[in-house]
Length: 430
Image (tube, rainbow, N blue to C red):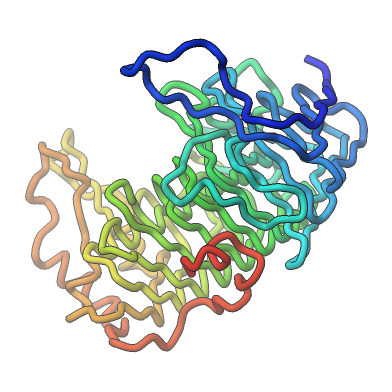
């Protein structure tokens, strides 16, 4: 598949079907009027390319930045993804060895959104979509060559939803300082369509991305799946806000081992899941790396969702985090071996006790006690229903008894950095 560009002329009126409609016909969403100049892109980008802010760029299916190629996106550029699922899902994918230079500013952020969004060139938001509009296109996927821990002894994984025979979906390697470019002042909205059976696209996927990649000032709004998900890698993330995801806000897999700092999660609605879902190594390679998450504010606006699910062999440190408005707080998983008299398996619960997983200097607003907000669980294994004992829970409480349960916030993120440029701030959701 080659890189294609189609010119679209300015037209007036909505792009709608003109056939007759019966009273009981379903209402079908249609693309918004596109009066701005635009270009439609699809397939592989095989030469260095710049997307300029003087037109709207339309993603028609998967657009792949090839190995050895640089895509530069100017500050203030708007990119819109077409609707479609699975093989027709629209997404921007940066292949291993590809480079994305998307260096926006607070006054001119780079905006990824849906073709259904009526946002125009020079605007920071449209007026017709809100936090309930999820899954309208795909998302942004960046694949690098930093270490990952996938199943078995493999050192390379395959991005979710991309067929195994498609090498552009590979991620991981042996270069912790790999660079995939710059992502700065980027807002990704209304994505998360299905890319394969049972799998949706994250707003931003960072898989095997190395530490020389710059990822700062990121917003993800109303994504059907996770807001930002890391699959291994060593990249650092600073200043990120995820608002109203249909699944987790921040998800760590494959033994991600970078530093995530100054982040916000705002969740709500009946479909809300966890603000944090953290796993550790999944295979026998690259098992020593640890994550750091610091200066975080996690907020449920209506009590729905859970603050955190720490599972598998999640290993690292969560510090200076403030949890607000949750009725279900932090779960820490302990697994048992049903085939071996329900013997203890090493899991996040054990890692808290042996200091491989540290939770420190965290605030739970209006919580009554540490025991009320930190709970071990046994993953609902019916063959070992009572393996997690009261003594186990007491050991957990004692280990992290220094947690604050204050009624006033003393820690968390600096939310002011998200003012003026984010959808969340402009729409009054911050």
